Image 1 (cartoon, one colour):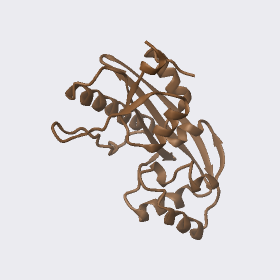
Image 2: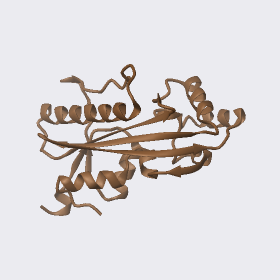
Image 3: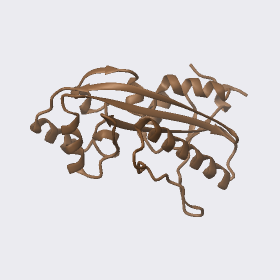
Image 4: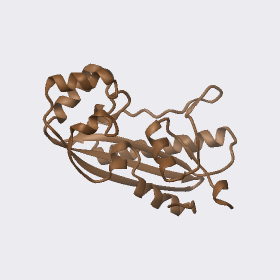
Length: 206
């Protein structure tokens, strides 16, 4: 099989994950989990009571890749590996998901201000009975944010659909004093771990 014939399905609508896969030359097709004919396969991302961030992000990631495989099966599409990912932010063990609104995003940013938090990104690839998952954990330290600075950031609406209410690749990159870990993982798809998984499915990688 030539390089151009290799492909995967991306079970994610994240433009950041699309950008990162393109960055390393991965040939992919979008695999949306919504289906008019077969119902909604989207995953409920609510944490379970007492669930730890590491357990949570991997559980959601596995559920997403399983939903992607089910969509592949229902739509009778050509068999190629399905890739799914999930990212969450954790502060002292508390899970910060995607804010529901501007008010909740502001609360998250105030909590992260001047402190270290963890960004956990899980990536999973599956093809039929073969499934693999990897986890990247990065530590991020925010500068102390004034209320004015938080409000200016909220005006950008970059917080929408982002765990912890911020995106490192946007204006919030200026909030970060220190990062220990994977920049791409904080964006939403740890490339080193992704490549390691792709190799297990015989996909040519950089």
